[in-house]
Amino acid sequence: MDTKGYFGNWGGAFIPEILHETFEQLKISYAEARKDPAFWQEYLQLMGSYSCRPTPLTYAENLTKHFGGAKIFIKREDLNHTGAHKANNVMGQGLLVKKMGKKRVIAETGAGQHGVATATMAAKFGFECTVYMGEVDVQRQRPNVFWMEKMGATVIPVKDGSRTLKDAINEAFRDWVTNVDSTHYVFGTACGPAPFPEMVSWFQSIIGQEAHKQILEIHGRMPAKIYACVGGGSNAMGIFQGFLGKDNVELIGVEAGGKGLHSGQHASRLCGNDATPGIAQGYKTMFLQNDEGQMLETHSVSAGLDYVGVSPILVDLWEQKKVRFESATDAEVMEALDLTMKMEGIIPALESAHAFVQAFKEAPKLGKDEAIIINQSGRGDKDIFTIAHAFDDPSWKQFIIDRAKEYDK
Image (cartoon, rainbow, N blue to C red; front, side, top):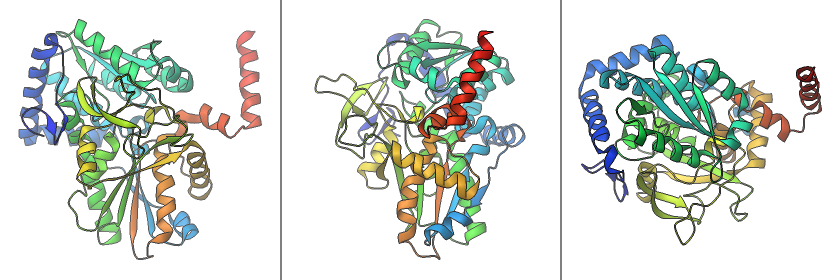
């Protein structure tokens, strides 16, 4: 990142004047933390004692035999506290909030995992917490809304626009502008105005640091390929940083193909041809937008990938051909999820299952002496309603009907 927050042609900080001083304070606190080895050690200690790190690198023996190619390893961020990689960033920002002396945090969330992680952090550190969530996502991620509220957070459904992640981000920024003195915005992914893309990626780099060490211990050498789903891009940036610049390690980001790249119902920015450069939500990146710069509606079976933009760092890496992008359709995601559950007893989040799709396509083409890593960014418990509906599970449907009758009594 340069001094103005750009990664190549992407990034920057396009913010209202009222937030200028707040961002300067954040930049200073972040810069001091980056230079202070004691801060990173405090962070590692916190993640080790509170968040179950390091997460394991699991050899998927049954899937490996099934596909007959490269050894398949899964980086288990689903075993991180709160069930996803989100806690890595949130707990790090929580330590910064303590340094800055603020008492309230706000956040946006799509899949709900970032919201749950922020509510968890707020409960631990004693902060007041408000989470903004698109009304559509509130409905499809109801279990996460329940847990956020039970941990003391106020969850505000956003009814504007497409009522998904981009709209939740807009509302969170409006809140921040109104409450700059007391409040820190715990941005959830490697997007937004600088220093958020770099800062979020720094906290998430713990994933790649661990995976780099683990694959050498288990496999004896570097993997051939690394796969990660990409919404905003924080889990991908997390694991990719452990392998950037390593010879013969290919990095693959997998976006939401929705109902197909030609359907107009997807969230693929770098894999498809629908995204164009734009400035919104405080930064410059590739957005799904029309000729007038109005954001298009996106679609994905996974709430966390249902976003119009993407990390400016990933766009820069894509332009440099250091990261390849692919997409996975909703139907492919359900197939990969079904296979992984039945063959390994592991339940990936719908977001993570996108990465599994592309890995399953490419693993058979590699030699048996090679290895690949799939970053399982989260667990699928949160998606039980969406998954059960997609599988058209009759027993689950009857369960919901019966429980609804009980509530009506």
